[in-house]
Amino acid sequence: MTTWLTSLRRPDHPDAVLLLREYMTEMVVRYHGRPDRPGEVDAALAEEPSDDLASPGGLLIVAHHGTDLAGCAGLRWQSGWAELTRVYVRPAHRGAGGGAALLSAVEQRARSVGVDRIRLDTRSDLVEARALYARNGYVEIPAYSRGPYAEHWFEKRLD
Image (cartoon, rainbow, N blue to C red):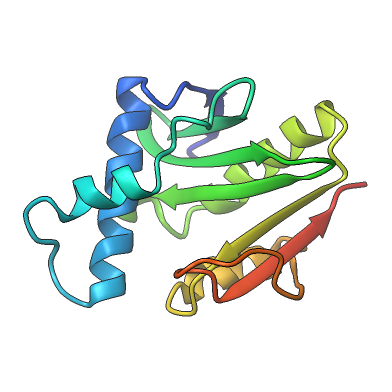
């Protein structure tokens, strides 16, 4: 059985840059229901940057499935809680437990700095993500944020 290994990476690390671009490409393609157009992913990355997913504003976890670069997840520190963002598993590694491994890694990091809950928002079309969160103890809550892509809100209390 292939093992999932996670580690902290800065968002400007080459592995992180690659994964964050793949994540945003998938978000653009799924949102529009068509292939991305030239410059569209760059514009989305500029509109929603990930540079704060490093100390002191947050963190970024990168996952390897065996030796393969396979996914990422980030946390942004808020006052008394953390916001989960950029959860992505490369298509070739989906269904192998990577989402759960990433959630476990970010939850462990959050607990280690005294955070007692993680929140996130997501889109309606990201049904796989919503199912992942529900399977891992995240429950839907009332809206805590506003944005063009926030349609469902989740929270998990960390014990």
